[in-house]
Length: 167
Image (cartoon, rainbow, N blue to C red):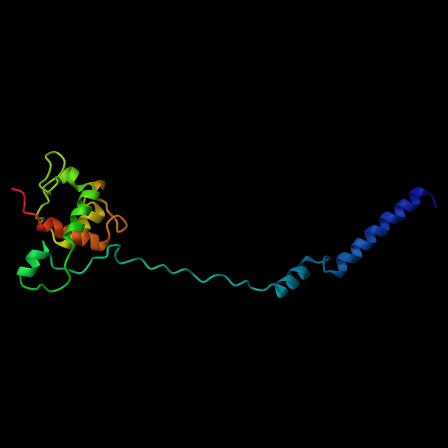
């Protein structure tokens, strides 16, 4: 046989082997292949649907506490129910958070900057809401729980209430 004949014979042998392999694995019929793959395919489990509950509130309000001005006043007055508030802490927060810049060192207000807040008539809940949300008066009053803790907010409110109202 000539070299061209051997070459043709090798090509036809390769084609015959390929066809035999395809028919053995089901490659000859697409319908049969689809049916066999459907029978062997398993469903893959997925993660369950996530459930997220919306918080009902983002503000934790501390329980009401009695306000005391000094240890002397406490010793001479009648015992008060509940824990006392650290007014010095409230004053520190007032100064550390820059409240005095606009509301004055004693909460008397600064003309053109901030209203008087000494002796505030706001309840602790109203005061906390104003300080946590800005109350529509601007971003200068946005103090989240990481800036002023709930107990710090109670101390700040109590200190402001202990100041004599500005005249």
